[in-house]
Length: 97
Image (tube, rainbow, N blue to C red; front, side, top):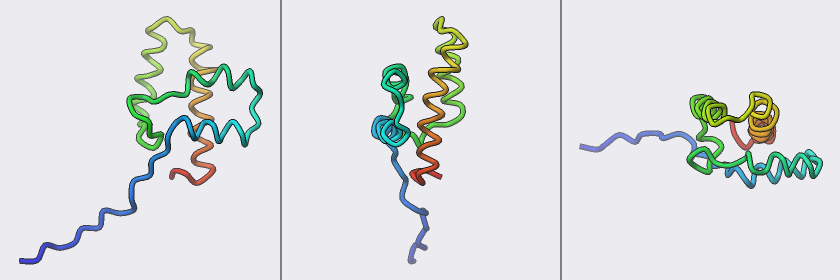
């Protein structure tokens, strides 16, 4: 018996956090102060593939930051803003869909 071929679809895309952030910094011409503030924030959430992040991952990360004592303003204006900008850049550049 011949096994039917299964179409697995297109190959999985990997978008490393740091290289995507570095590309965003260059293209957006972010101020050095912004880069310094955002750099430690933009790090993997258990892996180094931006396409593998789920909404659940982001919410759990945000909750952990808040539970750890980080202020709402810092979480919103630094952590989430940096992550949102980096992921939006990946979408805008066609690196993810």
